[in-house]
Length: 279
Image 1 (cartoon, helix red, strand yellow):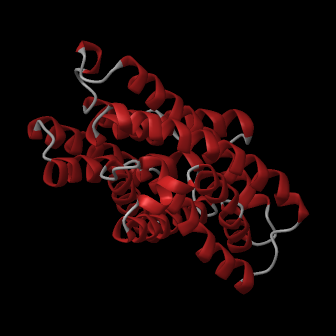
Image 2: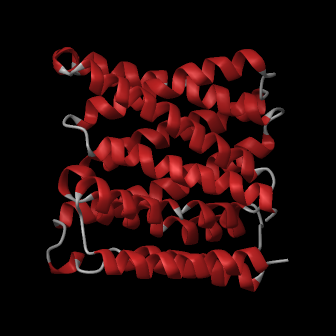
Image 3: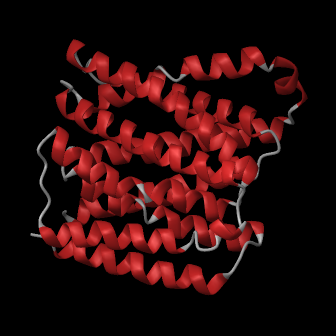
């Protein structure tokens, strides 16, 4: 992975952690997720207007990714109702790099060097350190299952979009249509919860929309990076977002303990070094 690609993915990691914190901090998380979906649409329209069509071959991938994202939003909503940001987020993101790397190997024949595999497993291990104690009642079982389910879905849409953006005639056009399609999510959420939407403060709605713009920017950067580096490697570096999320959880929501988060950060950093040394 080149230094430019690495910096792109690292920036995406921070933005992803921040928008998850926005969802966690929201009173009505369903309305917030609807605003985040809406926040994808306007940048998507701009991209569609600026860049050529991704071609008909990309349509099945856009449709599949949109459907899979519905499941992601649902499970993320459930998980954040039941557990802390600094516990749910690591489960959701910590399992996905290994799943994506394995999926990429079996689906598209993308075999990683052994040192890259060491980096992927090290990053996942560092991330999962943050979940210590969940089996002793730190999170209700429903929250754990929702987070694990979300991790599987993250791997699923990451693989679909990783392949789709490569198959597309134009990568930016693919990203644009992917975001425009999320209008269906926003319409469903607001159409079935109109009264709750009207009761939500304008400041909260604006924050949710901005969170959507950040989310879209983060994922767009990851998809762009997928055209330049292996899917498993991009996914692993992206999961540095967990360390950002842990720090936000400590400083924003007052979650703890801090020592475990520092240890996880060191281990994740070692994994990144392994990936950086991969030829």
